Image 1: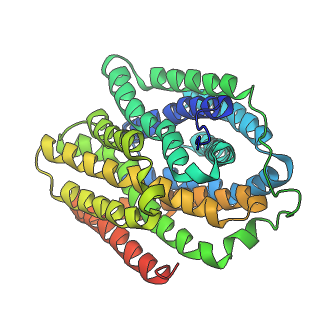
Image 2: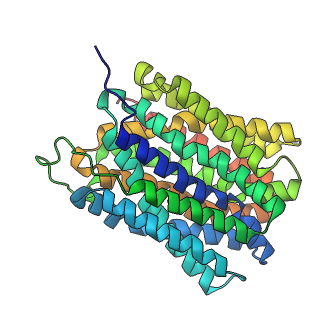
Length: 382
């Protein structure tokens, strides 16, 4: 029996658009260095990242509703246009003030639209029988930018200033917009018979509640790495942003390209537990790292865990959510990663200031462990 194809033209265009917008976003892994140079403290850096996430969270209900009632394409195009504008405005910033806060709000809104709509569009394209495999493969377009953004930022800042970094990010955002223009909404089976119930109905759907919980704890912990790895590298002199995230993304991509079929074959939750365990081990190693090699090894463990955890949770969500509510469900799922920044950025910043990077990363590992235990007890019979 011939298997349904994954690499269709809409899927590939969506993946390429996501690759370029993701790389544009991930060069901002170096943004804490820019803020620190402007005189921002770790707490203020965490707050600025948290502000972007807060805006994205507030935007998710109308974004999800718009996708379920009017389609994904309009949200994708509007998000790309707003992303280009927001990144271009960073070129005008020379101090921490109201202008910077306003730009972070625009940037958060654009990323909320793109993250939600592109991943939902990809879920529409993937055949149900190969759902986790297809979403894992699409996820490569989200993981590769982590490595590219880190390395590209290292290279640019070695030879130029942050203004050059923002120009490159804006150019990548323009490429994402151009690649999105040919996209057309995919026909969704069952959507005509089942009217959308809306964002809040998806939020309280009983079999999705354990997914919201474990995703929230996972995202909260990851915020400590994505917000403060640049500061950690600068303070300790260990490894580099590009080296760490190249190891992170390289392992995750290798897993998805070679073993992306595994969750569909053996069961998603059987893969999720060791994946979350790898993330806990990564935090423990990073908390005690005393050499470049240890930091890179921690990055590889993060890639091992994230490489499976994200597509598995994503696949379970798409399977359990009603087709007509998929946009709203994806809005909630992606909003939880912004919630991680909102809560994790400032709180981890406070913890770093009070007790250091080791204690902060150790606490983040504990959060993932707690989230995993509660999830498997709560969802154990499903």
